[in-house]
Each structure stands twice: as structure tokens, then as C-alpha cells.
Image (cartoon, rainbow, N blue to C red):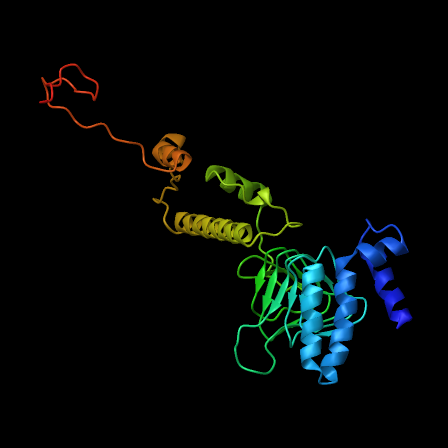
Length: 291
């Protein structure tokens, strides 16, 4: 028992640089308090003393702001940082060396009895406010970004962000076909369309930015193929003259850019008939109102 307590306290020192000494961790870390009370409640739950176990869980929630169902199974060196608002359901399974931050929910999506809550394997890190909902497995070493909503299985070592959760990084990335793309020319296409897809680096992946990058690469490949067709036609037909594509001018997109900047279309002035002056709202030429 004391060995497990020392292990839990050492795990706090490993993952929280703000921890200074043994006494501070033991007396001022609600995540540690909730874990110790849960272990007692879980022992009572397995002894079929369910009411007493639930009462102890309710007391822990009142004391720490962390709600852990006594039926949940939690492994060794489990760490809840800050912890306010953390909810762990009855059938949740948490492995060793797992870290949760405040506002995390390990919840269920079904009212049927049986396995309803997620399984977190060893070394999983779940960011603040993330919701993991359903009876699936989050693989070992996976990372769940803050405020992500995860409803599907996560492979080991993956990183998931967004609502709904999307995998933006894998431990074993999928093999992608290498495109023969000139980076200078691709950058020129980006500048021509007024969009820089590289504002988000590969170190901070963004699914939308990756989609735009894929579209630009596809446009570049289409452009290359069209040039090859034109070159082939020039060789087949001596009378064929290779023409140039019209340039994209800023003037052609002035109205679109103005609408984008303001969020609405520019108002159009009403047409006036020849010989009639324009009448404004504050014009003195308006006839007086009756009364």
C-alpha cells in the first residue's frame, strides 16, 4: 500500500514541474486525493458494497471536483493534473502511466448495460476538456488534443485533434505517393491565388491546410499535364501555335476581395433617371410630413 502511494507521488514529480516536495503533493493535489479515495471505493465495489462505494465516490467528487465511478479500473502511476471537472465512467479501463488534464470525460454513448466507456492503454495523454465517448480503445502512447471529441478507436501512438476527432499524426504513418512537384512553382501558384498553405507547418498539422496543399499539388500536376499535351500538339501539327494562359489580375478579383474583407457585398447605389437629382435622407427638398 505504501509502495503504491510512493509510486503515485513520484509520478506527480515526473509529470508536474510545479511539484516541490513530498508534503505539498500529498496535501495539495486533488488528483492524488481522488485516486486514493477511488482505490478504496473500488475495493468496496468488488466486495459488493456498492452503496458504500458510491457514497465514497460522491464524497470524493465533493472534495476534489473529480468524479470517478467506483467500478472503473485504473492502473498504476495514474496522474490527473488540476483535475476539476474530470469524469470517468463505470466501465472505463485506464492503463499504466496515463495522464489526464482538467475537464476530461471518459463517457458512454449507450444506455445498455455492459461495456459503455473507453479503454485507455498505457501511456495515453488526454488534453484539457477532451471528451472520449464510447466503448472503444485508445492505443498505447496516443495523445488526445485539448477539447477534442473522440468517438472512434485511436491507433497506438497517434495524435487526435478537433471535433469530431481526426488523426493528424500516426506512429507508423501511411505511405504516401511522392509527387514530383517543384516547390518554387508550387509557391508561385499559392501566391497567384492569394493563399499560403504553408502558414501551418508540418510540426503543427492542420487537416484543412493539408487539404488545401493537396489541392494545390493536384492543380500543379494538371498544369504540367496540359503543358505536355500542348508540346505534343506542337510536334504533331506545325501550324499549331502554343498560346499562353491569361494572367490573373488583381483588378479581376477586386470586388470579391472587398466582399471578403467586409463580410457582405458592397451596396449598390440606386440608378437615377436623367434630369432628376438624387434625393438623400436628409435632403431639404423632401416634402414636409403631415402633422
